[in-house]
Length: 480
Image (cartoon, rainbow, N blue to C red; front, side, top):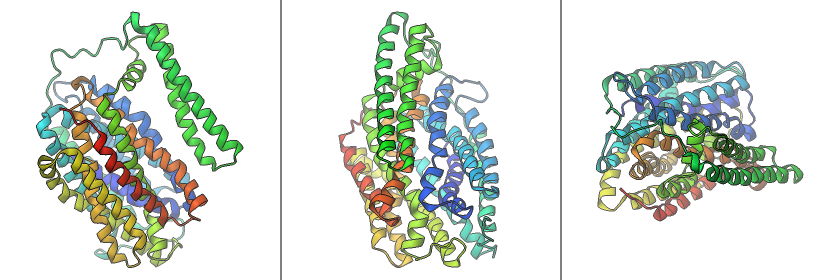
C-alpha cells in the first residue's frame, strides 16, 4: 500500500537537496532562492484540493479510486525529474520545478487518503508510520546518490560555470526510474474498497433554500480576505519593503476572490458546482483539522527554512565557501545532500518506534517530543564548526520528520467524514503549502533586514518555529 512512497520521496528528496544548488549554478542569487521556490507551493495550493475532490468522486472496478491519480502523477513527475538537471537557464529550471511539484502532488495527495480509506482508526498510526518508513528509505537513497556517483564511481562532481555536474544529472535519472517503478507497483498490486452504499456525490453543495445565507457568508469572508490582501500589499508598497512580500498579499487576495466566486455561484443557482463544494467544505473544516493546521504551519515553516537555506547556510557557515565553482563549496553542497539523506534514514528508524511511543503515551505527546528534538537539532547547527558534528543535529531533525509525516495524518483521519477523505487531505496540504509561501515571501526579507545575510540564522529561526509547533500540538483534540 505504501511502497510507492519510496519513489515519491526519492523524487522529493532530489528536488529538496539539489534544486537550490541547480538554481545557484544557473546564476540564481542566494537572496532570491526563496522566491524561485514559490513555483512549487503555488502549484500545490491549486492542485491538491482539486485532485482530492475528484479522487473522492472517481471509481473504476479495475483501477479503483486513488490509483489512477497515482499513475498519472508518476508519469509526469518522472519526466520532470529527467528534465530538471538539463535545464539550460534559470527560468526554465523554475518552470520545471513548477511542473515537478504539481506532478508529485498529483501522486502524493491521494496516498494520504488511500491509508485513511483502507485502515481502521486503531491501525492508522501504524499505516502512516509505514509511509514515513518508506519516505525515509527513499530520501536516504536519493540524497546520497550524488555522493555515490562522485566518490564510488568517479563521475565528476563539478562542471563549467553554468552547467550542472554529471553526478547530479545521473542522480535525477535514477530517481525518475525509481519513482515510476515503485508507484506503478502500488497501482498494480493493491485493491481498493468500492464506494459505500450511502455515498452520493451528486448532492448539491447547498440546498436552494440555503443559497442566500451561504452567499452572504462567502461574500463577507471573501471581502475580508481581499481587503487584508490589498491593505498588506499597499503597506509593502508605500513602506518600500521587500517586493517579495507582495506574494502574501496576493495569496490573501486569491482566497478572497475564490470566496467571492463561491458567493456568486450560490446566488446564481449553480448549487452543484465543484468550486462551491470546495469553498463550502473549506469553511466547514472539522475542529481538529483547524487546530492541526496551526501546528502544521509552524512545523512546515521550519522545514522549508531548512530546505531552502541549508545549502548556503552550511557551505558559508561551516565550510566558509561561497564560490559555487569551488571544490570546497561543492563538498559542502554534497554534505548537505548527505545530511538530508541521514535525517531521512533516522526518520525510517524512528517510524518503527513512533507507534510504540504513541501507544504508551498518546499521539499529541509523541508529536511534542519529536518536534522539540527537531527544533533543537536545527538550532544546534549555529554552534557547529566541524562538519562531522552536523550528523548529530540531523538525528533530532530525522525524529521530527518521521512524526510530521505520520502523527498529524493519523489524528486527522479520525476526524474526517469518509466520503470527503480525499478532499480534506488535499485541503490539509494547504497548511504545508501556505507556510512554504510565507517562508518564500519573508525569509529573504528577514535575512536582509535582521541578519545581514547570515543564512545560518534562518536555520535558527526554523528551529524555534518547530519547538513552538510542538507545544501547540497539546491544544489539539485527538478524537476517533
